[in-house]
Amino acid sequence: MKLRDENEKKKAILGYVIRWLDSNIDDAMNKFDPVASDSADLKEKIELALDPRNTTKDIEDGNF
Image (cartoon, rainbow, N blue to C red; front, top):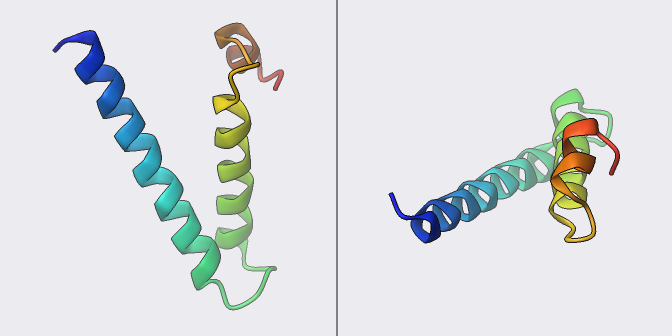
């Protein structure tokens, strides 16, 4: 697989995961739902990790 195709696939996977997390958050009956809470936390971490200011090392070390 070419690098460009691999990168596009990774972007598509991340987009799919974020939509799935959004669905979990939206489907929750209240904000104290553990699935919604975990989904919101994970979505926030993914979005922070995707910030171009964060390096691979920052992400691997959890410093973002």
